[in-house]
Length: 188
Length: 188
DNA sequence: ACCTGAACACCGTTCAAGT
DNA sequence: ACCTGAACACCGTTCAAGT
Image 1 (cartoon, rainbow over the protein chains, first blue to last red):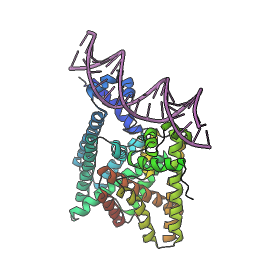
Image 2: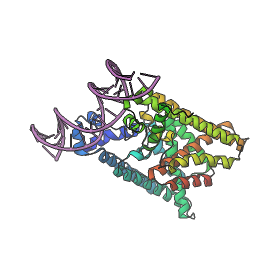
Image 3: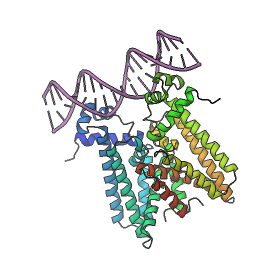
Image 4: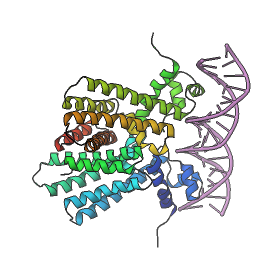
């Protein structure tokens, strides 16, 4: 039995909208139209827009954690794992020039309800911790602060590549940035 | 005689609002309130929101070009120039966690009028060209494509550092990323 | 338990009317 | 030339009313 209650259908409709146009541009009436209910009905499941935004961000971070844990447990080598990681961000762009849900929400940070901000922070944590774990396996003798800083920098650099690539509407910009990061030695 | 016509006062009021909350969250009524006119009057100077957004982005790119040309003409060495460049992005964060006008607009790309998008692209060009020129002076024997790719990567990495730092509301995140970029050798 | 229509104060935009 | 009030269709949100 598949779980396809209205709540999930709403989230499934709303997430690509946010990744395409941002949290601010998300409209309860547009979501309702796609789901086939009235906007007041969306408010029954998600009382405020902040509730919907936070639910989307939370699920997004949870899914990222699950996916990354799987990559880690496969114990593939460092380069393969990093490549899988980068592939997730690339996939968003390949899907109609969409952006990582986190990236677009971080940009809108100043206009986000507090509950959404909290989930956005959680996504950063998930990513930086995973990258840190990967780096630690790669060079076990490195100092924890250095590892953490490099993990943060890798995350930021990839987000930036996605941002600029999206701004230009050209995915090859993303690829060029990643290649230059590698050449510079950011991933090693 | 200072030029302080209504058009410029409107832009001066609107720009920090966009850098704080994004283009989508910008409200003609809020701008009007701060300027001391009615929103219909803002429409007299900027017929549509796209006109105002494009004017802001255009001026922003022009000012960046002027500033960067000045840095270049001072013929300071590479490290000093890059440091000045990074300082501009840091200053936006230091100013109430605001974001580079370009960065926030690139994130909102999917919801931007075409005229605004065009100016956003221009900003990328200005930055990548300047960085390319700097890199070429730094290592004159490098191939043009490699230079251009590294310039693009530096721009993207700095935008990403700003994005993540803003998302966390902690400017030290920006500093840590920049430090890690330097350590990795992205700027050399 | 879930949905709806109607209302509220907001938004960008238009336009006839004022000075 | 510049500004305004009033109207339009949008928005998130609330709530009494339906099933």
